[in-house]
Image 1 (cartoon, rainbow, N blue to C red):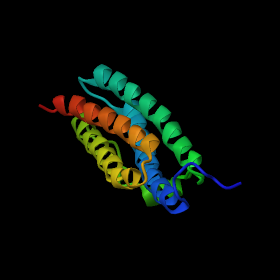
Image 2: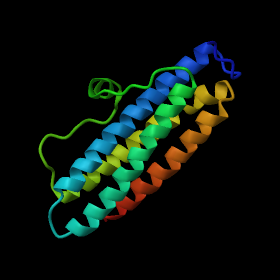
Image 3: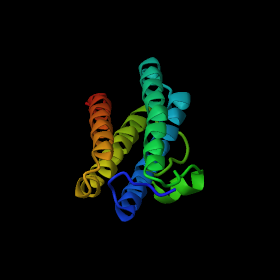
Length: 155
């Protein structure tokens, strides 16, 4: 059945592709954060273990919201490691970094998600896709705040 939501097929496809990159970044950051939650050690263990759990839980919910927006636009959401690796701007870590490095890497990951989300605004605005623009605004606000909180641990 044709989709007639006031956004052309071409615009929906462009936005869905951008959202797929956002989904891949979000999922990759989720995996990295969960990994760090399991493997953090040192004097800040309890604080970081709990903070990382809060963060990966939020990211787990976010991937569903982003994927469902892609589906609402009429396109399949990527859902494999292979697809995420190809789409994501966030790289996986080799080995287990020290706690301070984990924090720095998560700041970088949060900021990468912000950049990806921000890059999608022109496409959403070009076709008055307020639903996507709202999703992007919410994601940017959350990731900027999380990056700030993590960054404050490095001072």
